Amino acid sequence: MSTENNRVQTYLSFKMSDEVFAINVSKVINILEIRHITKVPKSPSYMKGVINLRGTVLPVVDMRTKFGLPEAQNTVDTSIIVLNIEKEGETIMLGTMVDAVREVLELKDEEIAQSPSIGTNYNSGFIQGMYRVDERFIMILDIDKVFSSDDIIDVKEHTAHEISQTAEK
Image 1: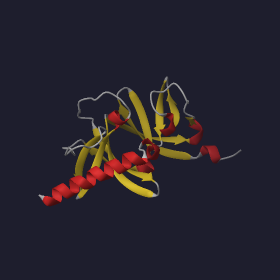
Image 2: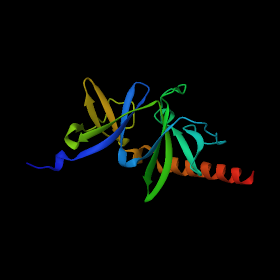
Image 3: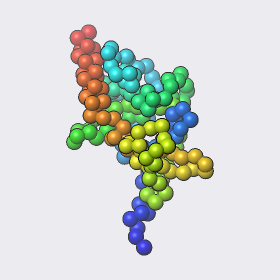
Image 4: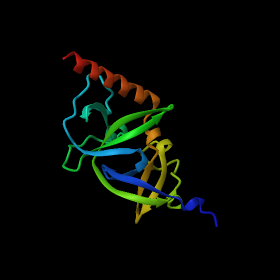
């Protein structure tokens, strides 16, 4: 019997609208309560702005907007998940706003089903798989594929612009 399919990986699950998503915890740096986000002029619609994270200017992206979900009011559960995104050999630290962080899941590879090519509202290119819980599914995201190279360039340019504006003050 092969142990290849029995590899256990750990995922952080979070909620957006009525859907539950999960990302590999190896990508998660921190989970923050929602705080004041400084808007960056002329930034892409999915970029909420920047926050100060221990002296570092951290861009914050609204996952609802990125996934084409309607905007929602922030609640006591709204969180920012700080992630390391790998793009073209570079690691970018990015905050992602989600409705609520749920739980940490330890899943065996065999428990994760392949994502369907049709039938979801999201680009299946960044859905790594689906994990079934009762009659619902948790979508496992390949967070590195959620953001295109152009997205990362836009975010970096607008963050750099905000840093230079702050330095001039």
